Image (cartoon, rainbow, N blue to C red; front, side, top):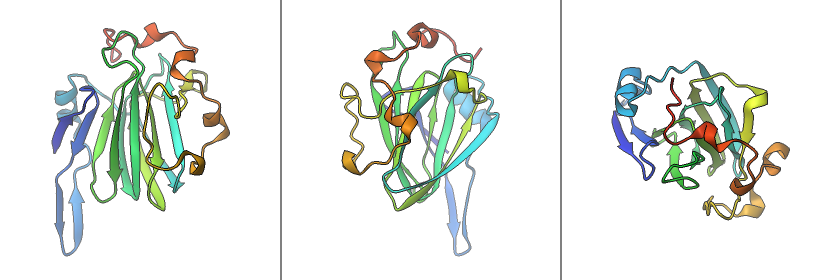
Length: 194
């Protein structure tokens, strides 16, 4: 398994080793000890989630506020997505910056996204099955998000904006400048893993 720091070093691109032959393939998709060594934190995933979406669907940009903030380990088992994470940690040198990576059932790449990031993806293929682990349970009252099309973020979603499909909730998310949350809850220097 190869671990690669992205342009925001806390977001880690993971390239698992794929063993393939005429029967199919085998891949170790998660190794807790290695992930903990690479991140420098003890990450304990407690829930797995799965979505199936058609072409042009955007899910995000989502995050949960403390005390229910979540780290995620995301991957695609079928299809292809553009996966995007935005730094919302006030005081971070990369605040408001993002990482975008193509994840697919073919490349088997994964991303580790720590707490303090808004996360979303757009489906580039006809359909996609997206799986992710989280290290904290969902809380409706701590659920929040960020507008996918905030001009200040300058995210290239690859597909024409007019063709994108969003939930009603996601259509009403605020831009980063207008987020109604205490940025100090995601302080860059605060250890969110305690």
